[in-house]
Image 1 (cartoon, rainbow, N blue to C red):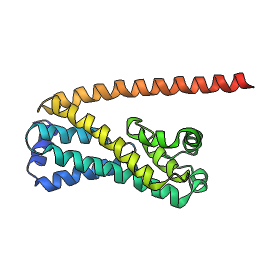
Image 2 (cartoon, rainbow, N blue to C red; image 1 turned 90 degrees about the vertical axis):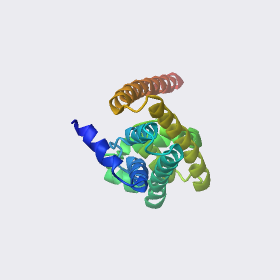
Image 3 (cartoon, one colour; image 1 turned 135 degrees about the horizontal axis):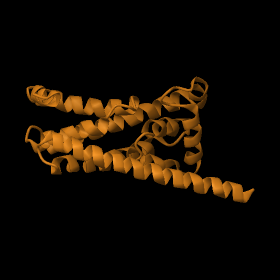
Image 4 (cartoon, helix red, strand yellow; image 1 turned 90 degrees about the horizontal axis):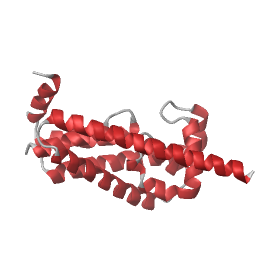
Length: 204
């Protein structure tokens, strides 16, 4: 039996509340530990819904709250510690170059970026830290982050559920879709960066 089959068999033997807790915790930690595949864990929760093991509302609620709490935790850390703390230390997952670039975007599009944070894989943690450093309103940030988490998780859970109850199919299809999505987002980012550079050069 494959490793994933053993894992699924083990998970199926756990009480529902522990599985929901695991899904919420994974969504929370994904913000604090960027390489962690939180979206794939959310998709796994959708797969569990497809098999009838878990309820849609439970998976949706726990993953959305986990994502929101993870985002707001980094927001409060950024707000508390301030800009200098991260610039001086230049952390591996919160590089000073990324912080500085994010700050430029936040001066113009702060709240819009927060509302899109879940749709920008790879820089979600930087967005949450920078939103705290930039002094954005906590209540509005929390509301926009909640909307972003709710929409993103709804898409992933619905997608995982629609692919059926075969995890190999779900994992393969979602990995392929996510890879294409990342490529599109990266291409758009490069295009916007080129436009920004050209405008700067032209203005000079």
